[in-house]
Structures are given as structure tokens and as C-alpha cells.
Length: 95
Ligand SMILES: Nc1nc2c(ncn2[C@@H]2O[C@H](COP(=O)(O)OP(=O)(O)OP(=O)(O)O)[C@@H](O)[C@H]2O)c(=O)[nH]1
Ligand SMILES: [Mg+2]
Image (cartoon, rainbow, N blue to C red; front, top):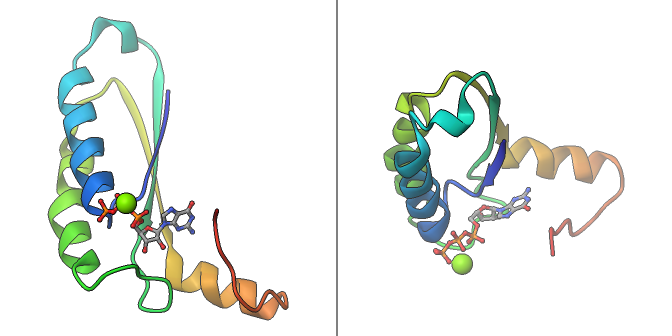
């Protein structure tokens, strides 16, 4: 299973934690790998001022989720923004 979540969003952090809470210890995940991709907030890309709070409060639930085989990859949006700049992409977006 792959879970992609904007963990610094209000909906993103809440839904990701609710979802993991509901499915952890599920027999459906027996011998399966769960990959969680999350995004750390960036001052250059942030949509609102509370993103660091959402991230700090939300990431713990992803770390604590009790799954058979869990892989967590957390992307740093500030670095993604910088890399886009170096590649000549002036206004990176994700829509
Ligand atoms: N690089 C990248 N960043 C993303 C992507 N989706 C969301 N983000 C970042 O994650 C943060 C939160 O995203 P939002 O879309 O505002 O999350 P949300 O859960 O809808 O937040 P609320 O509207 O507050 O409920 C923002 O700073 C975005 O820049 C994506 O696909 N790629
Ligand atoms: Mg939103």
C-alpha cells in the first residue's frame, strides 16, 4: 500500500492519521509493505502559517503507526523548491 500525504495540511495530517489509525493491525496488510510518502513544509511553498504545527503534531502518528512492514519517506518541500529553481523551473507547482 502506498499512502501519499501532505502532512503539513490540516486535512492532510488529520486524514492520514485517521486512516492509519483505522487500518493499523489490519490482517489485510499481513506480509505487505506500507510506503508512506509525506512532505515537510517549506516557507517558500506554504499555503498557510500553521503548516509547521500541523507537521509537528501530525508526523508522530505516522511514526507510531504499527504496521507489519513500514517504509517512511519524508520529502523536504524547501529542498524540492530549491532543486526546481536550479533546474530553471521558476514557479514550481503541483496542480
Ligand atoms: N511538493 C508538493 N507539495 C505539496 C503537494 N501537495 C501539497 N503540498 C504541500 O503541502 C502543504 C499542505 O498542502 P495542502 O494542499 O494545503 O493540504 P490540505 O490538507 O488541503 O490543507 P488544508 O486545506 O489546510 O486542510 C502545502 O504547503 C503544499 O505546498 C504535492 O503534490 N507536492
Ligand atoms: Mg486543502
